[in-house]
Each structure stands twice: as structure tokens, then as C-alpha cells.
Length: 254
Image 1 (cartoon, rainbow, N blue to C red):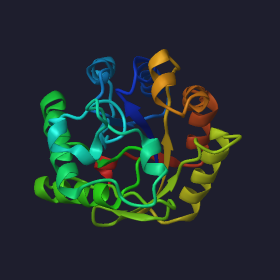
Image 2: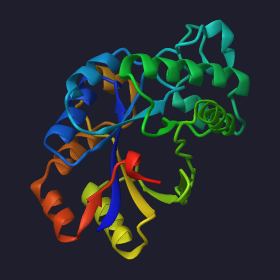
Image 3: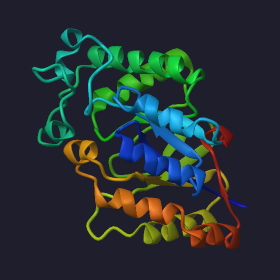
């Protein structure tokens, strides 16, 4: 068997996204889900998935919704109204907007809330949408403090180390023009078939249905619906079986 991770990001982003992820777990091939614990629809998403069998990771957020820390304590992360700065603010600058001490406060708050609402540690621990050296340093600090399975992020999607023995290579094309999830899946499967067991491809998906909330908050729209259909397509399950692919969970990796 060849290992392949297929992951769904953004549980909690909106009710439409939650329903799309639910469909992708219940009737599709998703068995790893990242939750955004600070969003208004987080508890709705967790309630939808209650009783289903999957690994839950913490998808740390500093660019959507509201912080779980007093905004006065984290001025580098928020706008005048106390909301997180949008991802656009990070993409339009050539320096790191994030203060390390402040982001550690917020990451810690999100982790503690994750424990409260989920009841156990995340199967993986990483970040949503923003590339920032200080954000990544902050994640590493909190991960070490609580012995969490940190999944590093590489801006160029180069291979990264996870836990002690696993190397993960990311396949994530949903933000590209003319996106075709089947093409991305085929590339990931070919990688799985031609690499060692501990060299694991990871296809990152963002399944969801569109609602007013997601249309107002996210630049990623139509591909979310494409991915729900893709992830629930019986053809995918057959391809996984024919290619002797094991849809591995983060908790299984060493």
C-alpha cells in the first residue's frame, strides 16, 4: 500500500463550508479535517461532524474572524475594530507584520479553546492562509510547549518534516487558474506510487458550499464546490483501490 493524505481545511469558516466538509467526510474520502476555532460557525461545524470517523487538526487563524485574545494585547494582528487583519494585508507587504510575542498569545488561546471544545489534542497543528516567519515561529513555540505534532508550512510547497520519520510533500492547486482537482489528485497518486512509505504526498482541499458569509470573507469560492463533488465521486474511491492507496491519517504517521 502507498500512503496519501487528503485533507479538508477551514471547518468553521461558514455554515456553507461546514456542510461541504460534512458531505466530504460522510460520503467522500476525507479523513483529516482542520478546524478554525475562532470563527462564529466553529461549533456548528463540530456538531455536524459529531460521530463521524476522522482526524481533527488545529488550523490556526490570524486573518479571518475575531481573535480569542483581547485585541488590545495583540495590536500587530488586528484592525481598529478588533478583528483580525485580512490575508490581503499580509500579501501586500514585504515585511513581517506579526509580532512574535503577540502571536504566541493568540496561538496559545486558540489551542486552549481547541482543547475545551474538542476534548483532546489536535492530530496536527498548523496555520491558515498567511505566510509569516513570526507566525511559524509562534506555532513552533506553542507546539514545543504542549508537545503538539507541528506541521510546518513551506511557501514553495517543498517537502517538510512531520514528527520524526515522515516527510510530507504538499499538492495544493485550488487557488490556481483553471483548477482541476482530478489533475491534482492524479499527481498526488503518482507521487505516492513512486515514493517510499514515509515520503507522503498531501492533497489539501477546501470543500464547501457557497453562502453569503464565505463570499464576503474568502477569495476562494467556486473551487470549494468543485472539490465537494470531486471528493464524493465514486471514481476517486475506485482509483484509490486500484492504485493500492492507503488514505493515511496524521495520527498514523511517525
